[in-house]
Image 1 (cartoon, helix red, strand yellow):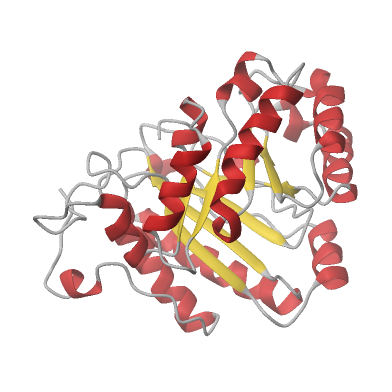
Image 2 (tube, one colour):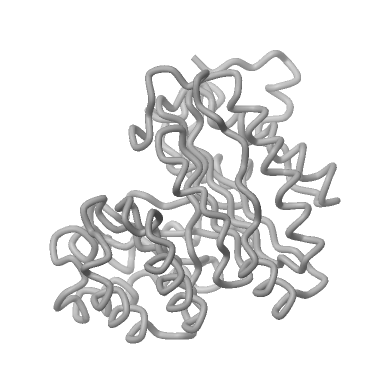
Length: 297
């Protein structure tokens, strides 16, 4: 994942910003006792997760889904898959597994949310074949999609079926640099129970906005291929533990790297931290291999 990549990550201040007041309010008003935690990578293919699969693995998704409980499904951004394909993915995975698919670029980048109702309806008809394994669908807008397009997001959000969880990631710097604009955007998402995606990447610290708009922390973490990748994840464990105390119920955390060389190892480190701090019992991916000094090359 090249987005937010920097040449010298050691010069970046990776400290997490303060939790915003609106986040505290949202969590206290909607919080419960149970916390649902899903952690995964962005892709399951061998080309990206080098060294993750034991020799002789025949079905990558089948193996991946026994190690992780979720996947950030980026493949659906690049093409529209038919409903039959979603059903096949569903049937290959354990009952507790969830998919978090990205909306297609036709919706977000080509048509830029205008005249997309037919495309969205078809996408949803297909994605709903995942049934109980469908997690939050997320919309990632182009980095040049700025606040002048606020009305497009507003129309999209208000026309989205309320029974299907939706998260949105905006990237244009102006969404974050102007506090009035950001607050209007946050209010729109909060009123419509749409999740505000948090992106933690080296070159765009403004996207670590710490503003939750629903009882869901949807975090896309991008490691910089630097030793700080691990300490940054430790900071996230502590922050999520704080949010859990405030009432956070849904943690959806997906781990990338600028160069995907050890995302599963980062995920294992993160999950161990969660299990310790949040008292969860998530499986440690490839634990038996890791105990034998697994390295991903």
